[in-house]
Image (cartoon, rainbow, N blue to C red; front, side):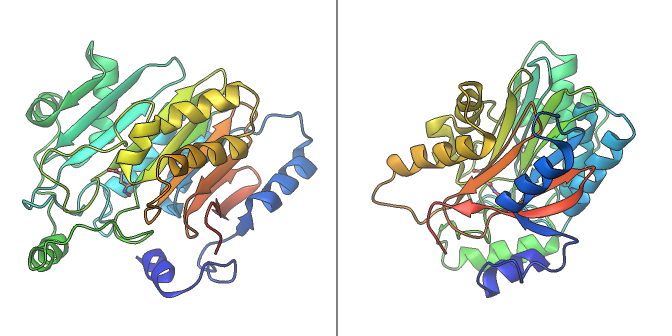
Length: 331
Ligand code: SD4
């Protein structure tokens, strides 16, 4: 909540984000890393997530520092946001669709290229854990809607009313105009995508969201789509996205970024190219936000977005850092 107010009320700059323990530009961070570790030594363990979700990245770190797997780290990390009723774009407390229903999307991917996803699922508080069960306990990758919900009950998940009073009242207010406009960095862009590397050097990722607030019933964005909202290739690295999902799907953004890293681009360069592909398809209209983050096998990280204001968290032995992403459109 603090972060949202800050982004709304001030111009973005390093001075503003003082509620976090550390703040650094990507360049500062890169310099610090190479000075501390030497260029060739892989940085691990490591967790990175979209936005300033410090509790989520701290939870992931708690798993990683004790030698836990990157898969457990990303699941446990993003569950923190799913459980946070004040986060209105993930899990319980998420904004509903235009009919007043909270529908959740999530996906998870492991070091072996296994993946699972749930799409447009109602009444279940932890979609990421259901996605993991789809991955581990079914022959499928994706379950949607009622089928996903039914599967969750079968696996012991309880039925939860995801619509909080706050989100309900805001939806009632929204219905007066029913204007559907994604607002840059504020209302619609707090999806958590997280990537982690464990002590073994294995990479996993997770992404979870309630999607765009007041979306059409049945609408699914990029977040639960493997390759769009998330992609991991343990040989190369991983990437994940936040923002207007339709645009990420159109460019298969996260897969693209991992492939660009495979071809030799750094995570930063690959994220920049990912955003540029989206811009190239939207020459007339750029009033929407996309943020990408990426990590490669060496533990180098990157992030890039269209509009200023996107931040991402990294957590390594060097500390917990909130990084201000560079943007295509300059402040
Ligand atoms: C979506 N990418 O459903 C998500 C929205 C998002 O914070 O990032 N929300 O399109």
